[in-house]
Length: 82
Image (tube, rainbow, N blue to C red):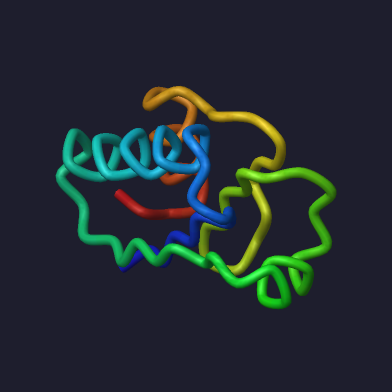
């Protein structure tokens, strides 16, 4: 099962990224745990300069933008989540 973390304080982009990640998981038909990381101190640990951030299985895959559902699906598949 893939572990997905959404890094952000709850802004519109962060919510859009969460929705895209949830949709990507649903459309792929895989199991994944999606966690929202909202505390600034916890976000800093991932060393990203801009939110939102997308972390899949411990690796930062995107920062400062909202990847499309299709992009997230490709990231999940590359990480072995299908």
